[in-house]
Image 1: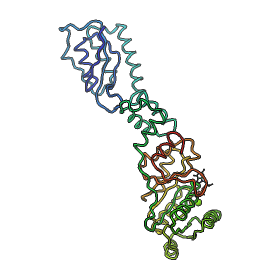
Image 2: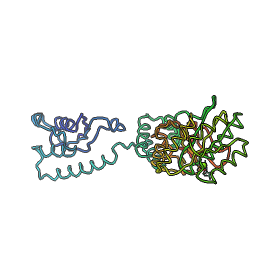
Image 3: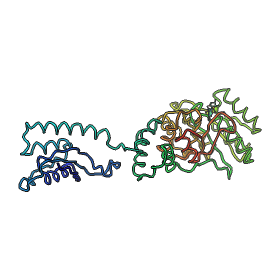
Length: 372
Ligand SMILES: Nc1nc2c(ncn2[C@@H]2O[C@H](COP(=O)(O)OP(=O)(O)O)[C@@H](O)[C@H]2O)c(=O)[nH]1
Ligand SMILES: [Mg+2]
């Protein structure tokens, strides 16, 4: 028996070549998009694996036979090619076997198309298990597949960590080299006020900067009390802005190196509230806007929420509650999909300690190993 692989730009081309060389009786063992560079599933090209017991005799060639069916599927084309063969009668039971074989292959190809194997497949499955969105899981797995064995002596975790490091960008923490107004926005309970307290402590105690806290969250008495307590503990002034337009006057009266503006976190569906957020940022002339997003959110919710809060603003991300998240898949999906700068991650309720600048090493290690 002879078994040979034929490739062509189209399935028809590959089949014509096979028929021409091995004859009409040859059986197609497998068919599909070219697999020599299989991980590039978008790559053009088809291949067929063909077997025959009887090599073709030269005079049996049917070179003029038309096999051009650009809109038919590979299986239909292959089946048509077999049926057109004068040496295979229609009632030949082999025809049925070949068609069955092709049918099964079609299903298998559908299933494995574009999904890599080996370490790449492990990475793919692992990313999915971490709730990374499928499109990114696939893309990252293909990147692993395109490496030629760089991961031979690595654990899966190490491969993932190394892979993530190629995607994560350097952090963008707040720069206080000149007077800066920073506004924190984000959903209710996402950790805005707590993060403000952590940042205030850092700038005031570590960097010896003068810090002013401004709260616009006057919807709940408890909210004002919460930030007031932090201000008192840290020995930092706090001013309350009842309306966004009050902010410029307050800032003129109380100058500081770093002004941290706290906002309320009503539902993002509340149109008025979103407009208010925008006007707070404008009246405060905030140079930096941090969107706080809890790592406990699902990936699509996280991406959607980030867009709804940021609107037209150039924002940085602050991922909170990473200590409560079961895994980092949502965060990874959001970082990759949004491509926005990441400033900080927070990993606990403790003020001032539980905040870190989001260095790629830290984030990659957390996502790959769950260790911050
Ligand atoms: N586990 C954990 N809890 C946090 C973190 N940041 C804030 N919290 C808690 O989340 C709750 C809401 O935080 P808060 O700052 O009031 O959120 P805000 O409504 O956005 O201002 C509080 O109980 C905080 O202690 C964090 O990084 N990890
Ligand atoms: Mg708050």
